[in-house]
Length: 266
Image 1 (spheres, rainbow, N blue to C red):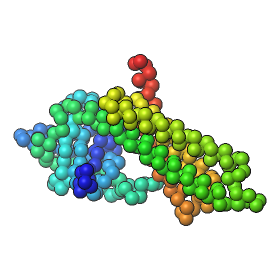
Image 2 (image 1 turned 45 degrees about the horizontal axis):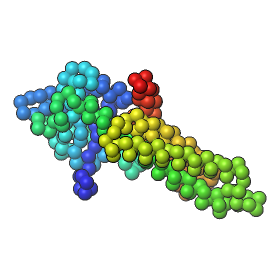
Image 3 (image 1 turned 60 degrees about the vertical axis):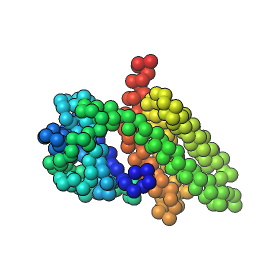
Image 4 (image 1 turned 90 degrees about the vertical axis):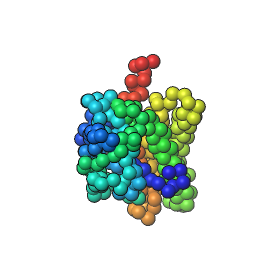
């Protein structure tokens, strides 16, 4: 994996269950020295290309305590990736549902203990939220850089448009928001590196950075005017890509729930 020779996929969400991950219905039933997996997973990145899947399935009763995690080779019989979703963005990273139809997995492919899968999933999401926040900062920075370059060269009324206060102040706000998001993301990442609690800070970083990226990329399109709306310039793609960052690794509404719950416990 570290060398880029293997590609994995994370199978938690389902067609009827996204934010309420503890309600998943995919089952893994113990049968001797194997588990038999049946169910459907949704929104799986690399569904057609992954070498292995981390599959979260119900091995016990309802709720978080009944969920386990299994490491499943992609060439295992019974795994059927569905047609790729027709997404707004992420065209270089296809997303699909995956059907698991009587997929037999050796019992020693259980990650952790039975019933600990939900905790494994949530810890993975904490780290993933830092990754999404970093994506948002980089995406917004690219949009700002392009918009600034365009505004320096584009002239109207004999003046570069960056010198008009209405547009210059818009770029200033974009730059300030990016700096704030970068600082939040680095703060959460440093806590993680030190082994300190970081879940709430990761949620804050993901929430702020992705909302910021949506605003900044939208403003970058506005800076370019009509040219921002055509594919000849990258800002229209940046705007489309920014939207998914507000959704993946837990929607921003879920991030607010995570943050508000931490406040109620403090």
